[in-house]
Length: 343
Ligand code: DAH
Image (cartoon, rainbow, N blue to C red; front, side):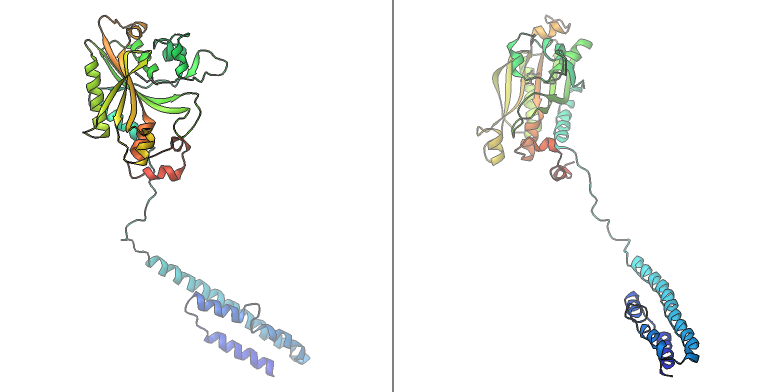
């Protein structure tokens, strides 16, 4: 009978099949087990098989189908193992590791740490204090009493329902905290974050960073201050850096000055940062006002001192060519990642 012969023929073919890899096994699967496999039509032949042979035909057909399936399962296991092994032996363990995604320090931290290092070398120690301050340490002790017009110089964030608790507007509050607990000689720097209620733009923000400096001892002079600040500028901006001190006003220093550093107008960024003048305003400074010393229980007849407050953001922007201050606070990883090689 023709149908029996076809079964025999396909059984022989299955025996002869020897796929060498998973791709060849797939060809096998399609031929014998796929939706249009060659065994399927033999089931339809059942109708033309004489009744007395139907049982034998059915058994032979099932045997064929089972054989095709069993062989597939066995080959699948073997060929899969073989593929796994060759994949692992293809891994070359002597190759250098792939590029690792290193973290990065924030440009503000990089610049602050650099400044702290510079002052550390000449004996200034770091003093850290609270960001939520009271009126007295932030203003009154710093010779800015309640009705003083200079309070308007800085727009202050007061805490809800409080007229005395505020977010410090400058790190100068640390001066008062330190002098209240320590007698001279005092030589500190106070790095930290400060807050002002200012409209956010490319040039100003409602939060930023400062480093405060304070040196109080016997016979501290304006010349000491100038020399210290020149040393700082040359360490920070290069050995040939020029500075200028412009007379200024701060309630807590007398006389007061602002220090500019010459950056020039060669690049778009320096032009922007210096408003076209070439001079970057870096810090405010001056001789500590005797009233401040008195407020903090230090004898102004015996001691003198100088103080300064450095704005960090502008230095960071100048150093890295950042022309919009807002980038420093958005924490966009595409921006931050650029500093991973700086560390
Ligand atoms: N506190 C001032 C500000 O935030 C900066 C400053 C100026 C600090 C002069 C000082 C100083 O210590 O002597 O604008």
